[in-house]
Image (cartoon, rainbow, N blue to C red; front, side, top):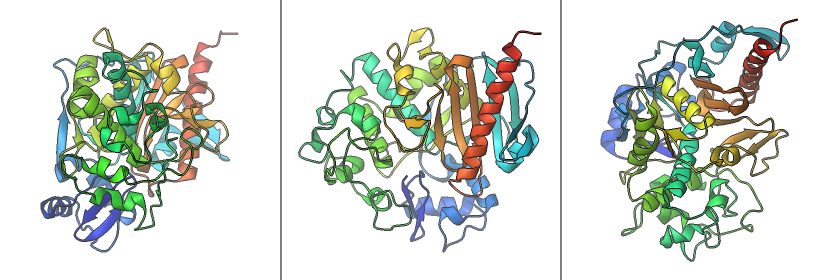
Length: 403
C-alpha cells in the first residue's frame, strides 16, 4: 500500500501511487468527475472509482511496458457451463458478475477462452489498474534476474544488491525472506493511522544518490529474527523493485517488456505508474488489458517460457506459488509475492477485486478486474473463491468419463 497526496489531503489507497505534485493532483481531479476534496479514495463513489481505475496511467506519470509486434492467439473454446451453490444461494455467472461489480472476467482453459465477459462500460480494448496484482509480476522479475545471472541466489543478502541498506534492519535479511515478507523488520501497515509507515513512506525524498524507497526502508529497525514472522509489507515489494533494477541494470518496466511482455506475445502495451523519482511503483499499479493479464497467467501456468526461451529457473513457479509463509488462514499461505492455496493453486490479488487465479494442474487461468464497493471485503473474497471452485468443478465434470 502506498499513499496518494492530493490537494493537501492524504488519500489512502492500500496500493495506489503517490501523486504529490500540484500538476499531478490537477490531472487526477480533472479526470475523476466530482472528486471530493475532503475524503480519501476509500470513500469515492462507485462512478469515481470506475472512471479512475481505467485511466490511472493518464492521471499521473507512467512508464510504458512495450508489447511485441505479434499477439499470442487466444482462440475461443467451448463455452463453459457454470451454475453453482455457495453461501446459501444459487449462482449464475450473471448474478456473480453483478455482485462483484465486474469490469471483466476471462477464463482460459488449456489455452482457449472458455468465457469472456465485460461490464460497467468497460471492454476488451481498455486498460485497467492491477493494484497489488503487480506484486506477483515483480516477484517473477526476480526469477528472471536469477535465470539471467544478475542475482546469484535467493539466499543472497539483500545488502549485496542494495549496499545502502547495510547497518539497517535489513542486515542479515535474504532475498527469499524479503520475497515472502518475513524480514522481521518493523513496519506499520495500518491504513487508518496517518503516522503509520505506509502512510508516510511515499513522502520520503531521495537522499543524495539513494532512492526514496531505500532511504525510507533503511531507517526501520529489526524487531524479529529474519524468517520467523510473516507481516504484509508493501514497502518491501517496492524494495524488491529497487533490487531488481539494480541487479538487472535497467528499469523494471523495460525488463518486464524484454523478458515477458514482448516475447510472450501480449497484445498491447501496458503501463506502470511511477513515483516522484521516476521509478516504477513495484508494489502496485500496472495498467493492462484483461486478456494480457490472462496471458501473464498462462505464462506462469506453463512454467515460464516466452518466445521459446526460459525466463525463470526450472521449477520456479512450483516454489513461488507454494506456501512459504503461514499467514494464519487455514488452507492458505504466502509464496513469493503470491497468495497460495493448499490445493496447488495460487493467485495474484489487488484491492477492489483485481486478480489472476492460476491452477497449473488444470491448465486454468482466471483473470478478473472489478470495482468492489470497498477495497477489501471478506464476503466478496469468499464468493470469488467459490467461483474459482465452481469453474474447476465444471472442468472436472467435463473430464469425467461418461457413464
